[in-house]
Length: 515
Ligand code: KIV
Ligand code: ZN
Image (cartoon, rainbow, N blue to C red; front, top):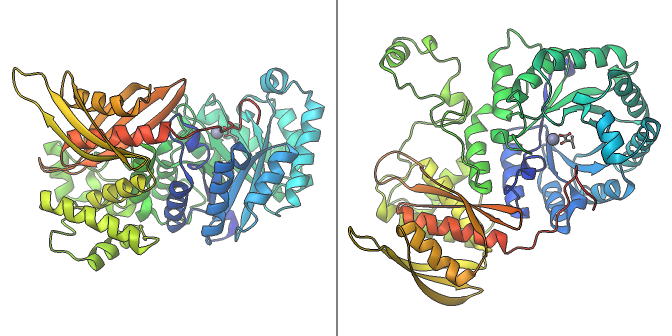
């Protein structure tokens, strides 16, 4: 495929995705997701905002060290200290990109930056030149481009391309744009910026009006050749354009697009599950491409049509995005090698024998309770094991009592920093009693904001996957847990969220406040 035909996929799940309240990820989690993105052949992985905190710096550094096939990118405001930190974090990357940005809309320049347009142009040019000292691969974004004046955007873009930006990214930061208008904006910019041919035009759309994918596609029709997106559409507020939607729309409608991505789309569902498991953001069943119902044909008429000829109602093949039939992959008698190799096929490679042993022990426990183990069970099990590995609070044992006419109660034993602590509590139901017992040990002082249960596969012996969202002083965390017993899954999810909330988080937001 020539460069002109190639649509570059820039995934920002680890940066903009992480800006969703409660979606913050640690270093190991980011590396796991980055590896899955690399396997999917994502071109650029934005791994984080290195100056935000030492943890963010280390996470970007770890992704940069690990990833060999994709370009690893770090975000930096148009400030020397941000750019130097990003350059440092990306030092060991096989291919590194620095993404620097400054706002260009009248409202942002006046109210947020308190800078004149001339000062903004000067700072943008300075930032690009500084970033070029670390890498030849520099991207510049005029933040809030969707509400900026076209003439001014042209001026900024011409200046940053001259200064050495090879990619210019047009963000609809607040999700305000409408498809035909956003497409026109991209076309006009490409026509009017005199040196437009020296850079790739990119777009970054937010979903506040539910138009992020539509706006991105309209931009591609009008010449954009990079789309910034996230798995499951995760991201600030209503999220970003969903990678799976953009990629599959372009692939499915090749009659309308003069370009295509290089993605291995069969990895999409695996990536979606991984991101959902790690962040604790469940995927709604009717979500395009990756929702559980996206390829389910419930009504008799549809089923009949699909049985006669798939194309009557299917515009894509489920297997092309990685949906496999729920099939029994492993059972009680499967050995470690079968377990290891099936997980490798699903994209999980254990870093050490110890990690493999821990996951395998859990698998044996699960196989005792559940006859058929599906791919979905294996993925939940690995996420659970990895989440727990470094936890300070662990579930040792629990017993709940729930009986008609009686008040439900729970006895829980937790290990907190390796010291076992028991507690008993009553509640309006077994889950309520369990959470109260846990809370009486950990005293997290949090408020429960969301509790949801989903079944991972079908059948009454399926594992339940529980998501718990806790809030404390404005900070939100999500916890997840899976088990064939949904009260135990609930306890695991609550404990997972507590482990996150007790970790200090002094992390700066790239688009708000100072570092
Ligand atoms: O939405 C936005 O404008 C951003 C920029 C940092 C590119 O995320
Ligand atoms: Zn954004």
